[in-house]
Image (cartoon, rainbow, N blue to C red; front, side, top):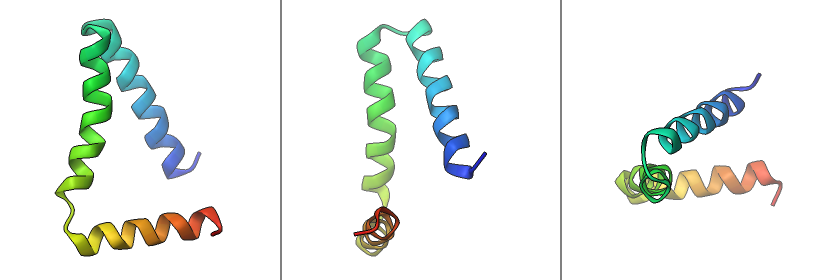
Length: 60
């Protein structure tokens, strides 16, 4: 299993656990808010590098 697949599987598991423990809207806020906060914590050079790597992987 690749590293990205492991991360995705962990995210799905965390989302299911959050849905059990929290109301659906709070779980959705956490699942969407954490990656958004992590992206916003990057400086402009890191964001640019992340966007460039993502486009390259998609074959654009």
